[in-house]
Amino acid sequence: MTLSQIQTFIVVSQTLNFTLAAQELGITQPAISTQIQLLEDELKTKLFNRVGRRVYLSQSGLLFLEHARQILEKVAATTDAVTRFRPVTKTDPLNLGIGFGTGFKDDGPFLNYLRGTYKNATVQSHQALDTDLVRGLEDRSIDIALTQIPDESTHLDEWADKFELTPVIKTNILVVAAPHAVAQNWRRDPRILQEYPLVLPARQTFFRDYIDGVLTRLSLKVNVSLETQEATLIRKVLLSGMGIGILPASSIREELDRGILTGLSVPEFSSGSILGILTRKDDISVIPSPIQLGVRIFTSGWVRLSPGLS
Image (cartoon, rainbow, N blue to C red; front, top):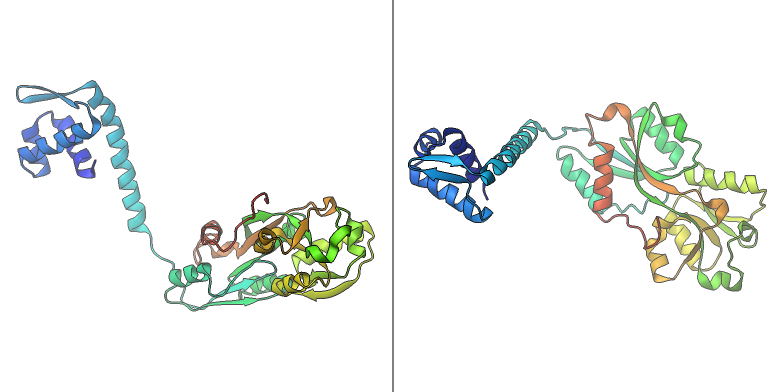
């Protein structure tokens, strides 16, 4: 079924005459007959009842006419939307700020997508503490920020009037260790955090703010052996068996799948975490919408959830 066949069918239904339809469409009458015949063959039904030189819509033809008009209306709307679309034209450098636990790779498909979108601009990415990301958005030295934001983050209300937050993926928060490091002592009890050195995200990250809030609420005295912005370094230390950590499950998906790290969902850390996109609300005309960005991140395969994690 082609658009040409549908258009021909509609004109014949209006003129009820193959000759007049051919004149209106600027083609021959045999061409009209062929188009209708092909359409009827595909639909396996007669669309017209022929009486002499006159034709009349059959019951099937009346039904198809309604759908045919809708098809052409959809095509017209799509054509109009695509014709009116103009790619974004940002020519200044596009600055991408990367926070904690995103799993972002500088040569990954998402960055390639941005570079393809901004053909006249240089796309730059750099890692930063979340407080610096927010400051960069405010002073416009950063255009897009990506970071982990726990559901219970106290910062969400502060941004409501300034930033657009779009979730890309939601994941559990896990207490994490190498299986050989915790052996017989692995249990769903927050007091386990007092029994091993802790490897934690750096301060001034939303994720660390959340962890500190829970530890304070539980009055737990812990030994923090390492604080770093680099989730990759945390994973390496945990794999060596030199402590336990608290991480978003999506940031250690591969290690969990391979069984080289094990994770516990401890009730006291039951808040989920969101890998989220932060953009300024007044930048909608300058960059793709946050939802578009989120879809591109997810479909790029940059982040995926392990089976059973959400």
